[in-house]
Length: 337
Picture (cartoon, rainbow, N blue to C red):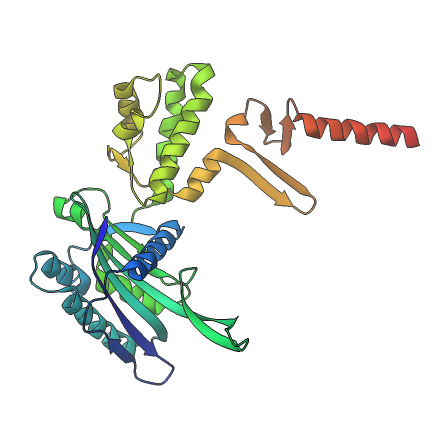
């Protein structure tokens, strides 16, 4: 993938004052620094658990980004014109709604032979202190790619294909509901999917298919599914069920696809995974005061058994280290008695 266009603007508004908009006229030079910044922002964006997935609204008249992006794709306007139009409209909304903001807006387009993406990152700058070459304390500012990062990613290739699965990803601004709603309105983000429900349905199908997997291969089968899902989730890509079937050794791929689709009420071959739900599939864990318990979900009803009536957890075959600790402790108590 290669950055084809990049530009940055700045919008600031304090309480009881008009917003100040600083617009950059020329695009940013595509150099090593720009590429490092983009990769850092993109990596942070894709790692956020608050990512939401959807598509453009077909009804919203205020979906400015959708309209402007269409013009950019068709080479009817530049990214400078697109971003300026977006920022000027956002300034009006910020003033009319009294939104407090102090952020840089970075617009990027990247492309390869087969893929085309557009990103809008909303970032804050943070101050840090350092000792300079004269041993004085100086202030430096850096772009915060942590919890304050928000923005929108659009898979232009899939959007143009009118694919059924969501091609639009957003990370809402944290702790600023008015700004979040305004950006969603201007971007045209809609049709947000329930990733948790989709993931749980997907995992139900994965477990149902274990009856077709030899017992000695079930652990490897589950691990392969999890590895594939994690790899796709980290890339902000959907799980492709036929593609997953080809990664699983010793199974009937067509039968796997049929079984998985039978558990999907929409009969879709692609699923966007919720990382938190996937973690629950991999492990059960809990902590309370002096008690901490964690075990693989695959051990439930095999080595670990739960009795709901008595709220009791039983473990058959303790880990060797834990067993030795218990025996040592009990022997020590008996010797004291």
